[in-house]
Image (cartoon, rainbow, N blue to C red; front, top):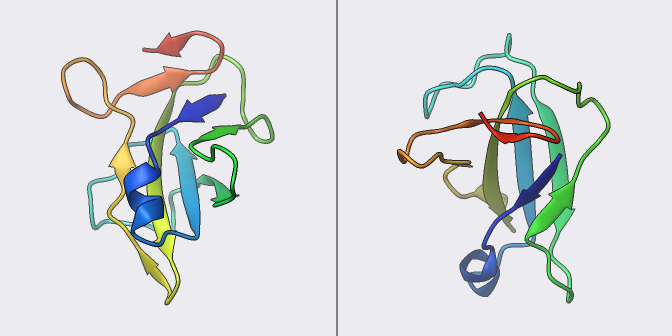
Length: 101
């Protein structure tokens, strides 16, 4: 599963890394239940383009996932989560190797 985003604004604001969370369930903003299992990946800001991540560990072929990204700042502080959105502007599921469901 590959995820791409535009991180330039966050980097200019001082982001030190990005956190990507993947789950089979959609969670409302501000509700982070311990019962929900996320696959979590962190991408450090570096000098080369860092607005993408390629993930395979824990990904099950044919499974539909919701993907969200947040910028992490020193302090620690984290931006609001941004979901991968579909053409209708709502959070969309993505199936590895197939695309948006």
